[in-house]
Image 1 (cartoon, helix red, strand yellow):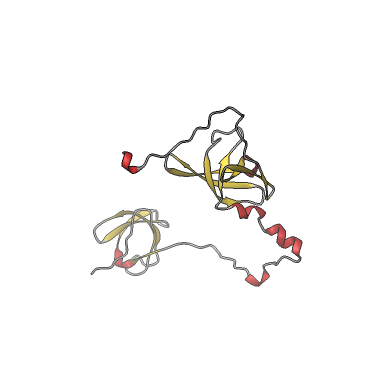
Image 2: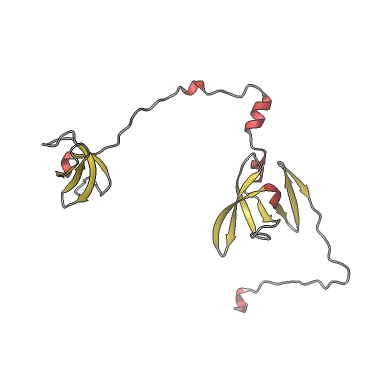
Length: 179
């Protein structure tokens, strides 16, 4: 089994041994067991064997900070402010309402923000798609009713009965035997 580096055009490399040791550049072409490297200092192309090359990344400086410096909430009010009160709606089935081209579509809340927005995964044409909506444009689906969502709270809507004399339409799903 032969294990070797997989250099590709566009990789930044450094020559670690051989005549060109210390040269830094970009791979512009890959040949059988060598690469053509564009030398950044001399502005020329040089062929270098793979065994003399290493991947290279240039770091100007990295400033690390102590993890102990992270401030902790001082009181209960600060802790509550950092908590998203709308997270309890994640995973709940909702219906989109309001003047919007997704009106009457159903979906599942996948993420929320404390500002009152939600990422909803809509199942449109069997292709899941996530869209952002304000919570005021969503209603929780509960059996045969919808619940309004307001500022982290929910308000129950009662199921509306059709007017008297309206025929009741019962839809039945076809069984696999009917197909």
